[in-house]
Amino acid sequence: MIPFNKPYITGKETHYILEAVQSGKISGDGMFTRKCHTFFEERFGFQKCLLTTSCTDALEMAAILINIEPGDEVIMPSYTFVSTANAFVLRGAKIVFCDSRDDHPGMDEDLIEPLITARTKAIVPVHYAGVACDMDKIMKLANAYNLYVVEDAAQAIDSYYTFPDGSIKPLGGIGHLGAFSFHETKNIQCGEGGMLIINDPQFNLRAEIIREKGTNRSAFFRGEADKYGWVDIGSSFLPSELNAAYLYAQLENLQQIQKSRIQIWETYMQGLKTQLSGCGVKFPVLPKYATNNAHMFYLIMPSLDMRSRFISFLKEHKVLSVFHYLSLHKSAFYIDKTDNLTLNYSDKYTDLLVRLPLYFDLHEAEQSFILSKIHKFFDQTL
Ligand SMILES: *Cc1c(COP(=O)(O)O)cnc(C)c1O
Image 1: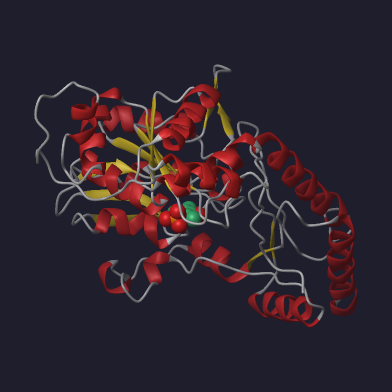
Image 2: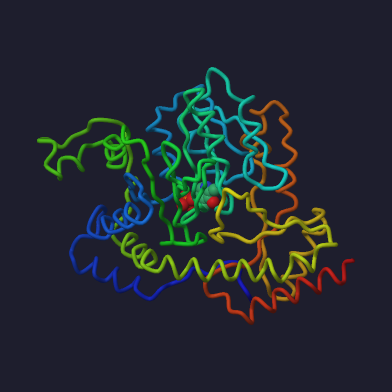
């Protein structure tokens, strides 16, 4: 069976975990957590990073940091993972869902402005498949209406956005706050893990407090506070050194991992795009301001029925492909809160998008096998 995902292990993970265990310090914010923070700050120029136990947690911290209160409105795509919305719903926010783009599952930036009201507090763009949203448009709107921008960059490590003036910024580093995921399905992973990226320094101190159960423990240990106590709301958002040690081994191999994933992504594109041009299948589109971090390779099928048959066909040939994201505005939890909202593109991706296996260890022969089965499916179908 060719799985949909296989978490890559560089070999150093267990070595670093052992080192953490032997150091006698395995709770959070030890040497490996610091190494991870430094890695991101140096490599991507992030002002401040804080490892968390998940991207979900990083988003929850963001919602607390921007003081989301009951009744506040937060604009985000409907075609996304539940955590994007849940983090804000937990603080009492009303989610205002935006449709996806015609050419891309990311939110349609041109539909955001009409959704802004006096209660709007934040925009949460999701860089779907690691492909940038048009951040210049989004940041301009945020500035004009005095809104916060929290980037859900869960899938977007090592991906960039080019502003119209030519300046380039890493995703997660553009909004006021950003969130990465290191879940085992992501490019760089530690099983479960995440990171909050703080781009607006006004949040630095409070972020540390919220992450440490509402205490000023971090400042106390740096000698900046003479007492350590309860100063704000918060929770336990920091990962243990075991997770950080594992993650650090992955980060040391970032370049190699990315190179391999991009190679696999391009092999899919070259092996399918021209060949399937007459089949009604659509392919990932990269706007010229975006880079490709090869988080995901997907196809947009011509119909739901064809997608179901495609997935079954591949499964019969021992290849696992998957679909995901049921439009959140139609979810059991939110459907009665959205006034019969229709979002055609979000529903289109819900019905038609299918993801192909993509992981570091996918061998050339396996990928050729997958490609031959895909061709066989379309030869039979048409
Ligand atoms: C994976 C993912 C998340 C959640 O990440 P966790 O680390 O599992 O909490 C949130 N948003 C998007 C878009 C994701 O892909």
